[in-house]
Each structure stands twice: as C-alpha cells, then as structure tokens.
Amino acid sequence: MAAGSTARWTRRGISGISAPTIPTPPRPEPLPDDPVRARRRKREGGRMTLSAVLIANRGEIAIRIARAAADLGLRSGAVYSEDDAASLHTRMADEAHPLSGSGPAAYLDIGQIVKTASDGGYDAVHPGYGFLSERAEFAEACAETGLCFIGPEARHLRLFGDKAEARKAARAAGVPVLGGIDRAVTLEEAQAFFASLGPGGAMMIKALAGGGGRGARAVFEAGEIGAAFARCRSEAEAAFGCGDVYVEAFIPRARHIEVQVLGDRTGHAVHLGERECSVQRRYQKIVEAAPAPGLNPELRRDMAEAAVRLARSVGYLSLGTFEFLVDASERTEGTAFAFIEANARLQVEHTVTEAVTGVDLVETQFRLVGGATLAELGLDDPAAARPRGHAVQARINMETVAEDGSVRPEAGLIEAYEAPSGPGVRVDGFGYAGYRTSTAFDSLLAKAVCHAPSPAFADAAARTRRALAEFRIEGVRTNIPFLMNVLAHEDFAAGRTHTRWVEENAAALAVPPEGLRPRFAAGAAEANGGDGFAGARVDTTDPLALFDHDRAVKAAQAGRDRPEPPEPDGLAGVASPIQGTIVALLVAEGDTVLSGQPVAVVEAMKMEHEVRP
Image (cartoon, one colour):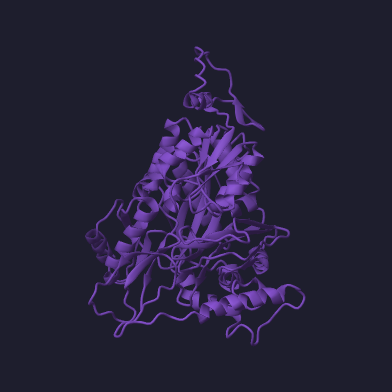
C-alpha cells in the first residue's frame, strides 16, 4: 500500500486512489472474452474495484453477507444444493445459482463454485464460515481464476488451518501454548502422550484441519482413547476432508476467551476486544458475550497483546479470531492463559463484537481485502476496541439437551416462525413458516443478539432472555428453553462459567424454565404431557391460540397412535434417538450386546452420535 493513499467507496463497490508512483508501461486491454484477465486487471496497484460477489455458503451467514454486499452497492449471488433450494438465503441475494449434488458436499465442491462465480461474472467470492472458509486450496483456486477471495491470504489459511503449525507459530511469537504434540499423531502416540500426563491427567484429541467443536473429544481414562480417537478422525474427515488429529493437555476448568483481530495489507494488525465463549456443549459454543465479564484487567490486556503480536508476526490480512484458554482453577486465580488455535475467517459470534464496538465486521472484510488500511478505516485508534456496554448472543439450534448433557438434533416442518424485536435486539436467522429443515446441515437456525448500553453485564443477559421468551418457533423443537436457563443462572451473570459448566449443570439446565409460555414452545402437546388436553394452558388473549393448540395436539396424537412393528422372537429393537445417517456399526451378527453398550454411530447435523440400547 502506498503511503498517503486513500480509499473511496462508491455504489459500484470498492475503489481507491494510490499516491503518485513511477509510471509503468501501459498494459494492453484484456480481450472482451477474457474475464479472468479483466478481473486481475482490477486488482493492480494494491487496490481493487469490486462489483459483484458470490456467497459460497448458506443459511443465516449467507443472508448476513448479502445484506452487507447490498449496503456496499455490490451485486450478490447465492448458491444452493439440490436439497436446499427452499433455504431463505436463495431469496435474499440478487441472484441464485443451483449446484449439482446434495447436502454439504455440494457446498464443498471447489471446482463447481469457482466455475459458477466465473461464469456468472462475479469478481469476488465470500466463503462465510464453515464449509470452504478455511481451505487454502479454495482461496488459491479463486486467485488462479482472477476472483478476489474475501478473507485471509492462502498462506494464512494454510498456516492456521493446520492447528499444529499454528501452535508452532504462537511459540515463535512468544505466545504461551498448552503442552501437546505439534503434528498429526497415531493412536499409539496419543496413548503415549496420555500416559505421560500422569495420574489425574486428561487430554484433548482434536482435528488438525478444522474447528467448531467437530473432531474434538476430551479423554479422562486410558480406556476411552481408542473410541474417542476413531470418532474424532471420522468427524474430521467428514467435516474438513482430512482425518488427521493431534493431542494437547486438557484444562478441566477453563474459560474459553477469543480475541477479534484485524490486519491490513501493510502488515499492521489491531484487536477489537475479546469475547466470552465458555458456554459450550460438546465443544461447540452456544452462548457468547462481549466483553468477557469479570475478566482480570491485566489478563484482558495480555491476551489482546498476544493475539496482535501473533497476527503481526505472520503479516495477517483480514479478520481473524485468536482463541485462548484461561485456567479458571483456584490455584491460578484465572490469570494463566494459553493459545489454542486461530480461526482465519469470520466467526459465528462476530455479532457481539459488532454490537459493542459499532463496527460492521463483514463490511470491514470487504474494505480490508479491497486494500484499505486500518488507519483509513479509523480502526488503528485504541478507542475503536473500547466496548460500549455488553452484548450476548444465543445460538438457537434445532436440538434438545437431555439431563445428562447429550444433544438430540431435531428436524421437520417449521409451522410458525416469529422473531423477537425491540431496543437492542437483533436476530440473524433463516427460518420461516413452511420451511422443512434437514439433518444434513448444521443445527443452527437463528442467533439472538442483544445489546445493553449499561455497564452491568446482567442487563444484557436479561434482555437476551426476554428476547428468547418472545421467539415463536413451532413444528421443530429448539434449545430455547435450555438457553433461557443458561441466561438466568447466577454463574452466567457472574462470569463463572467454564468449558465444562454445561456438562456439570446439564440436569438443572434441561428443566423447562418457569415463565416460558406454551405458545412459544415447539410442541405444546408434548410440553403439557398426557393427551394434550387435560390440564393444558391456552392463552385466552390470543384468538388463535386454541386452534394452534388443537393442531399441535392432533399432530402429537398421530405420532403416538402409530403402531410399532412387531419384533422377531428373541430380538429387541434399538431405536435411534435422532434422525440421521448410520456411519458405523459397532457390533456384528451374533455378538452379545449389553445394556448401554454402543451399537452404532449416527451422523446428524455434522456431528456423530453413539446409539446405545
């Protein structure tokens, strides 16, 4: 980037005027039938002009990106698999393009997506999160075709996409990391590492090529290693196309804190504060907050500085999230921290940072990749990272959580979908009445993001709980009751949660909260028990409540009245608690099966679940 250059934004997109430079011989104009050369020409001089972006994703994040593109005057295009044509994101973009294939595989087809972008006259591709967002080969394929990849450079995707290499980079930058093995390991090496931890030790087995909780398991006993290792490899292969895993020490009571980092093409990097991400189930975040409540001020500063130091050491470009674990045990008083990974992409929970800083992070992605500097965007000022109040995001997933902490994915026809509103309430989602969901994709349906300008974190938590109570989703069960219990818990308001907090409190969190009106529950008949009539409560102020209740009761009765098929003599059926695809059978014909023994593995919502009798 030339010193003193300025960025100019027009309705046509991103453009810029560089400072005077030594003249260079004029380049010949590209031929009219050479769109690749034309797109490359628009990126000369460190600046680029964009006019159209293809969004290589689906659901709520595709809608979020389409809205940002519209704000910037960019034409947007959506893609959809053969079984995803009804998804709302196809209507929110200016154009929609079908992909061959069904399920996640269609969204992971690099060649098909790049060809769609090139043939459609797009000059940029935004990957969103998940799918291809952290695949270096996707960014390289875009560059080879003259497409601008809205995200980090391929070298950064490759570096941080390999979690072991990311640990090495952190060490080189003087950032603390957990004990572990910085490469892919075999089962025998994982067993040896666990043994080296000594009595009472625990370890994490984690996918080398991705995150999001997939391909991750905690191991507390030596006898658990084999099964956990196999499940992690299988999930990682399905989610990221690479089954390699690595191991690191596990902190039993840890807070998961992440720092939002931004870098420009000059090598400069800054942070926009941190997020609290400790409320997780199966190592997947479900509630996030910004800033992290009750965090030691020195620790907050040290983690932010460590994240920026690591980003600058590699010349990081675009948005990135640098994640840390804080030892929350009494012996450390919450002051020890260690780097665990960096996500070189837009995060699901970017919303809470936007709420407390006022910075549109998706728009900022476009600007940074377009060549703008942090100084030009006003983001090199420390005041930009100073939070204004508190924000909480609750992920509304199509799932239920049992008292033992196990998760049951749900799917079906959404009969009613009414999002909450009011001051400080934002909902990013893609549900609508009449939409039939699928277990082939992630369970996330919507995100309720609530901001309170007050210095009290409890105010943001209370506003989020109120918003969830107003959210009406019928036909498909969700985790809204569970989320409301999390937000009402005194540990959450006090910042005393940790990564195993949900697991330790699952029994209490799974109980339906008081004050949740039946009309906002997905299954009124099931919530009231019995046949759906005796003792049922109906909102007398709502003239349609009786009809809604009757419809729910009849649907529940129809399912209960369906006769079970007879079982052959001497055999007992094992019912899967979820809809999904059987990916492994753990027993063979003639085996003796004990109660509680895993007999099969079912994949649903990109996660694998054991089926036990």
